[in-house]
Each structure stands twice: as structure tokens, then as C-alpha cells.
Amino acid sequence: MAQTTTGITTGALARRLGVSPTTVRSWEQRYGIGPAIRADGKHRRWSPTDVAMLEDMCRLTASGIPPAEAARAARSDRREPAGTDLELLAPSASDADPSSRSRPVGGGGLPLGDVRLECRGLARAAVRLDAPAMEGLLKRVISDYGLVTAWEEVMAPTLHAVGRKWESSDDRYVEVEHLLSWQVSTALRRAAIASVGKPRPPVLLACVPAEPHTLPLEALAAGLSERGLGTRMFGGSVPAEALDSAVRRCGPAAVVLWSQARSTASHALARHLAGVTFGLRGARTAPLVLLAGPGWAGRTPDSGMLRPRSLREALDAIARIYGEPVPGSER
Image (cartoon, rainbow, N blue to C red; front, side):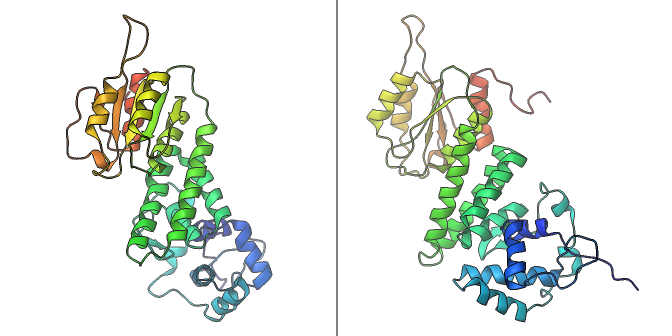
């Protein structure tokens, strides 16, 4: 009886591992760590046993073992993954349609939970400190799904998982968090540069004084650029006096203040900025102030302020200021 070809393609395997297909092929050529069975005239198909071997390879190299030694160890332990049937690693809806969610999976020991396939790949690449793989994956998810989905369903869950791992492991994984944050920041800035806003009052983005976390604001800047809206990004820990000066000089349509913790949220500063006016006499205006981040939770925003709960909500609120169409609002 002819054997039925099962397994996944090299591209699907690479996405699962968080590496490029070129890396998988390179490992096969250099270290002989390829699929055990190949069908004549067909592309390589990786069985559950093969996938387990490559996952061992990734785990060992992430722990600092040289690739050649890791490959020998992984080959010697080639096996069917315990408790896994062929259906799990055969071509599935999640491989054919990357937008579908996977079952709860891990990413190099990170507590990811129920996430997209690309989230697992990003986590594995982060643990391996594989910057090229992270760069390529982030570029693909932004291109394929758009900025909002890429941030909310791939970038943010992976960042949170790394943060939780760091907090629970006696300051291990600090290097993973730093590299992942840099790669995410780079991808977001490239996405923002790729779009040019129309000539009109910008959106001012800043962290409140003593607040250094900027990645959510960078995601918002990229999302606004994706919609053709211009921004002025002032980054982390902006002094109150500098914020006041920036608002008066830029004349923004909106000011987004990010606060990660309640200890940094300053409602007095937010009220002050919401009352700053600019423009010609008789036609002066004030910006809409958006209180973004968990630091503002637990208090109703004052007049002239909004507190968006998500990236998409913030983008939609700002789009309405400019009279731009909001995706889905026509329904």
C-alpha cells in the first residue's frame, strides 16, 4: 500500500518555529536535520516526529548550545511528540489561513495561552534572540493583517508573556525583553514612516512625566499613519512644561497622554492641557485629550477628554475628529 503523505510544509514549519524557511533549509543542508521521509516529486513534508526534532533544535540553541551539537542531540532523540496525534501537525486550517487562531501553545517556555500562530513564532524567535527572524515575522504580520491586528494579537501578547516570564524568573529573560521591544519598536516606526499624513493639525503623542513606556504610543502613531493622519511623537517621560509648550506650538487636534501606572497618571496635567487654546482671536480652539493606558482607569474623564480602552478605539476616536470614515461604522 502506498504511504499517505502527511505533515506540514517547510513554510508552515518555519512559522511554527519562528525562523525563516531559509534557516530550516540551512539546518537540513549543514546538519542533516531534515524530514525522515520525502515523497518523490513533491515538496518536503515535515511529520510530527520531524517537527518535534526541530523544536528540540530550537530549544537547545536557545540555551546556548552550538547548532552542530544541538542538531546531533535532536537527531538522536527523533521521536513522536508525547500526547500528539498526526492531526495536530498535519496541514490544517491554521496553516492554510494564518488569520485563524491556534490552540493554546507555548513559545520557548513563555506563557502565551490561546494565541495566533505568528505569536508563537515571535516568542520562539525572541527566546533565541533571533533578530532577523523577528524582523521578518513582524513585517509580514503588519503587511498581512494591518497594524491594529498585528499589535493586539501578535506583538502585545508576546510582550506581555516576556514580561510575565521575567517577573517570575528572578530577572532572567531581560535580554529577551529588550531585544523584542527594540524589534517591535523598529517595526512600528517603519510602518509609521511608510505612510504620509495629510497637511492638517497633527495628533500629539506623549507619555506623562515619570512614565517611560512608549511602545503603545508607537503602535498608535503607526496606526494613525496607516490612516493618513499626521503625528508628533514626543516619547517617554515628557515634563509638564514641555507638554504645555508643545501643545501651544503644534496646535494639535488631539493630545494622547499615556500612563502605564496610576502612580504616574496626572489628572491635573490632563485638565490643564485640555484647557490650552490656540489659533486666531475669535476662532481659538482646544485639543481633545485622550487618556490612554491602564494608569487612568477608575475615574470618569472630565469634559474635553476621552479614555479609549484599546488601540482600535483610540484610532476611531481620533478619526472622528478629522471627519474620517471609521471602519465598520457604516454597518
